[in-house]
Image (cartoon, rainbow, N blue to C red; front, side, top):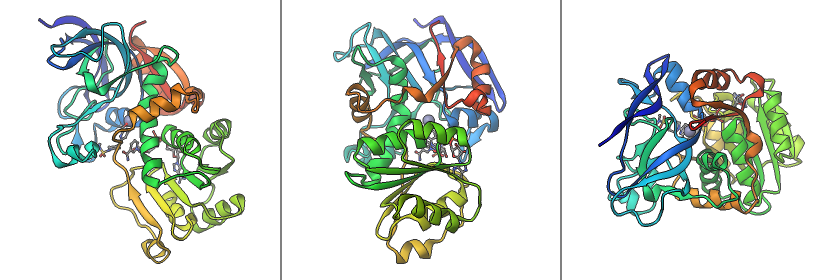
Length: 351
Ligand code: NAD
Ligand code: 572
Ligand code: ZN
């Protein structure tokens, strides 16, 4: 029988985020119960809290937030043989149907029936206890912290973006936007062999973090003229980038991404802003700049974990703030405002 005493961060409706006890779930067949340790706040959690929805995904009923998560296995459901109680795991938050053509081809992120934490109406993992399919949990080596385990989620977005971009040894790369996703794309691009990386943002603090993480050039965006920004990128790099990865979703930044990318190169759209944007499509077409989108990630957790476990990637500097679960509202406020240079805010569920 399910118990109580499961402190959870519940978004009741737009603007109303509360802490309340929910039922402690018991693991079903092929699931594990996880005593949650840490959950990172993502921009989408903030968006659901402030706006009550993203596009067609509307919060019509109370929903537990959180999808960047890691914890310790506390119980096993029937049939679980790959994990044991006490294992430290990172949780891949999207579980697909496993049956459709997308799942069978390995592109399970495109599964129309995927169940993804904290996307309405599905509850997330920002709570004391949470159950998840065991094969979407990744055991962490002893030297990888649970905080790093939680970072595997946004790092997987960066890995998927760089895979879709085809980043390889020797590429010059432009990253547009230095939020957590831009910064983790930067780390992924470096790990995949990019030689020189230039990054943009409106905010100097975020650019300073990008330089600390190994960007070669950081350009502050102080004009809405995308052709001028593209010229500045070329001037700083000494050539046009082979690959651009757009991580802001802002219209002028997407425009800059097209103008800046070398003819025959690739622009990956990671940032999702307004559903319709005005872009110089003819410029992209006649210069054979391929524009590719991404939707989350598939098969990226193992690679992201390997990058962290090997020491090739150090994502820890992104973590700027820590709060206990009881202070969730303060944590969300810090993430929302970026106070104190906040980049990735972590909530600790078991303090
Ligand atoms: P964020 O808001 O923290 O970061 C965005 C950054 O872009 C900010 O630092 C902001 O200052 C900067 N920016 C805004 N306008 C700019 C401009 N004109 N030029 C350059 N920089 C500009 O968000 P995040 O968590 O880093 O996520 C980035 C984007 O990626 C969001 O749009 C998010 O929805 C999207 N995302 C998409 C996927 C996907 O599957 N496609 C997955 C995760 C996140
Ligand atoms: O880590 C997964 C993730 N995905 C984001 C944003 C933040 N974190 N996406 C942006 C919003 N889309 S969506 O298709 N949607 C609400 C399902 O607009 C998903 C990807
Ligand atoms: Zn996210």
